[in-house]
Image 1 (cartoon, rainbow, N blue to C red):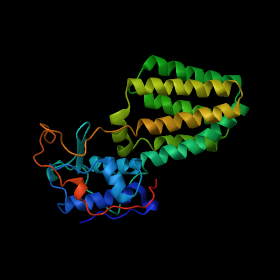
Image 2 (cartoon, one colour):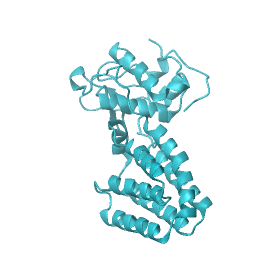
Image 3 (cartoon, rainbow, N blue to C red):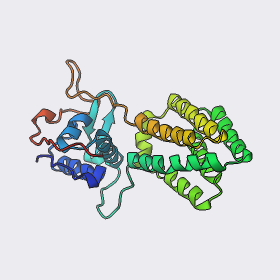
Image 4 (cartoon, helix red, strand yellow):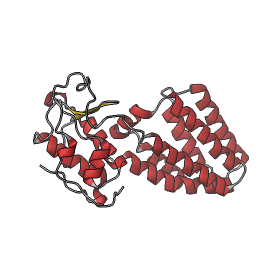
Length: 266
C-alpha cells in the first residue's frame, strides 16, 4: 500500500492515520523499522515536525516504539496500550500548541512591558527564584506555567490570564508529555530559565518590543528543542541489528513507491 500525499490542513492526524493503516495491514511487520522521519516527510510532502507529532501519537497508542539512535519499531499487538477510536478527537499537536503560544504570548509580553507595575515584576522574580532553586525537578512545569500566567495577569485582564493558562495546559496531554520525555532535562530547563530571565528583564525595563521579541524567541527555542533528531539511521550499520526484542527489519524505505514534489507544509 503506497503512502499518499497529505493534505496540509490535516497535519499529524492524517499522517498518523496513514501509518496506523499501513501497520495494521502488515505493510510494516512487527519488530520491523519504519522509515526515518526525513524519509516519511519527503514521501508525504509535509514537515518533519508534523511527522514527529504523528510518530509520538502512535507511540502513545502503543503501536510503535521510538529507540533513540536506532529508529522507530513496530510493536506486538499485546503491547498496544490505547485502542484507537476514530470517534475520539485527539489533542492538538505539540508544535501547533507552541506556535499558538508564540503568537499569543509574544503580544501579551509586549503589553505587559507597557502595563506591569513593580509588584508584578516582584512576582516574576519570586517565580524565577523558585525555578532556580528547584532545578529540573517535577515542579518545573508548575513553575513554568505560573511564570507565563503571571505575565498575562500583570495586564490585569482575567480573560487573557485564563487563556494563557489554558494554552499552557495543552502540553499536559500524553502526546506532549511523551515528546518532552525525549528532550527535556536539566540542561534544557537551564536554557529555558535564562530565556525567562530575558523576558522578565525586558518587561521590567518597560521595553515592549524587547519583551515581545524575548517571548517569541523563548517559544521558538522551545519548539526547536523538541525537533532535535532521534538519531535513527535510514538502515542498520554493519553489526547492528534491530532494537532489543525486535526480530525483523521493515521494508527498505527507499522502495516505498510514492514520492511527492509538493512543497512541504506544516
